[in-house]
Image 1 (cartoon, rainbow, N blue to C red):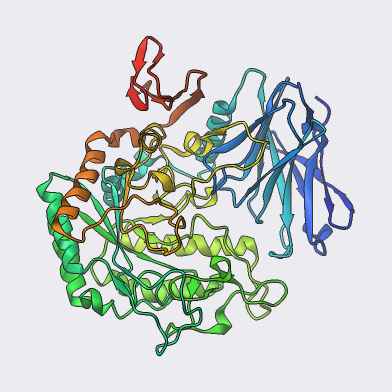
Image 2: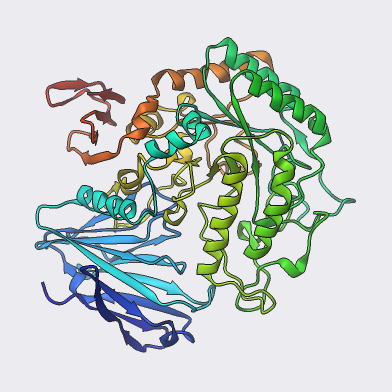
Length: 572
């Protein structure tokens, strides 16, 4: 293969060549940040990775947070098209060709997109780094890891896992479970989130004050949580991790970063303490949900001087500017997020919570850098502050959970509510998805597979296949639907409810079904391979030889002499 050389060009057409050096036998390609400090964006490309229709091989993209898996694109004839992977959970891509597989790992110091294009049946893959939303303050470093001809994406996954284990960036789940009782309990228990109260969403009042604040809907009181726990016991649920959402002042996304007083309409602080102690007396873990990033004007601690700022001087707002239940959601700059966590989380701990504490969105969103001259924060610094918040919470409560699973967080992240938002890939440049994140990190971090597999036992057959096939730790959600807009509830329309005793019994029965078919020991074993067969079967094999075969077709199919029923999973 011709020399692998990377270069970059910016929005003005200037070209910059990477320098190379060999370190520990690996060729590292580096682009000094001083070269592109004035660029609006740069695009990083390697001509040696270009291909044309009919060539042997494929592109394997990073694992995105929107569509399941890592997109795979074969070099076949197709219409002109592009594929963008943004906010990726993994910072690597691979190119397979007639000579082998070349995996490109890059330091995650910037927000990036991985872009593929097919034009006149010529294929390219490249990285794009936008600098209108982040300061150009760090060098870009790429490392190339070649694998010989005959290797595939399963070998790539094994390579990356072994590299990260060797470098001490992650550790085996089995080892961590031996050291921490709460994590070992979580491995054996479904995550059960209970959304207790919330204001209207989308908010009819974007800029809320005490005088115009919309009323909060009460869905589940603290007393009702005790009754849910009683029903778990009655139906024989041995282990469960209850995570209370919206227990804080004015419910879910009510007044962050204000947490206290504990919401009075749900029963108040003494009733919450009573509930926490009671649930723990039954042998269950009970934790709670907080948020470190969002700021609402109605908060008693709102400080506009602490907010993050974009390059053009505009204060950043989340939720596409519309905000959430508390109105317009501003973003607290990361150094202040850490200070807030260090102040408030010990007060949360005093309620009695202990176990795998949950902080919203911190591992599914790329952290926000800040251009405010009073407190500038680069992307690299922002990630470091995120990790410090996570470590503080983990040390305080006994573990850490969040929404999403970005690879830079996996040295601390114990559990992910879901790996990605399950949306369709709308481009002709797509030939399927490979579960690269699961192939690399199963056996290292607990996770529920996707937003679609939340509450999977009350959904369809494909959700159940996904939940079992891809090694997820079951996740359930009472009152997952809180957005008033039809179709905007990303965990689906099937919900667990406890408005009356009949609903409560039915919801707990759905959770019990997952407990009965969930193999907690499977969480400790690395995945060896994934294969998608022509007859509709998907096959996941673990390193101990156990194989899960999922049949997504409506006809029975045979795998190695074993019949796998239609729309079902077979364990061999």
